[in-house]
Image (cartoon, rainbow, N blue to C red):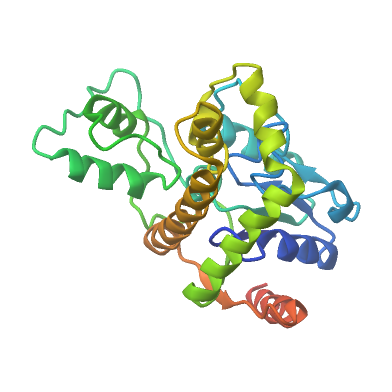
Length: 285
């Protein structure tokens, strides 16, 4: 059995994945693009060793931040783990929908001999919107037409509602939008208390300006701060703002691209949410 736990940032996906893995004696596969990288811990809200409860976790901390790890790389790695663990229950967890779709859907990559599209009939704004629909993590400026066109030509999937290659159950966690934004703001404050500035400074002092660090929320804003472009207070507010916008894009992406079974999270008693999800899963088996 494969279960995919999705949803916006800050909604409790990690906690649910552990509970489901315990219930079904399963393994967990990361589907968050930034939790792939070593050292990007606080800013990505990566699960701590003490929280894993002895459950095998895959595709966390597998690459150096200087490496450009692609969707295609993830597809190969995730499917290899699935094939090697066919006798086990597998729980995917993360908010990078494109990674999850590449792993579980018939997501194909363009062949080199196919001529690239020019998109000459679209404005920069329309190109930008298309790129965001393709990947909410996309961080290309709307006026950089050349990069947007190149990004849109990189890979192409089958239809947006194409069926999963695997008999998977897709679970989405959600909550009131205002409450979610409050939780996101609070989580950013907690990240700074836990040492986010020092975590990012470690990479900045080494002069690392990789794609991962230049696109990840919490890292790119602090890079601006270290470069003297904005104040620390401005960086904090920008991280909160970008995180809220990202959560909104995640909802849009999952609703447009996958058939998700959504569950309202009970933050006062998370066990209620866990039990509700398990009850649903049992009906699907």
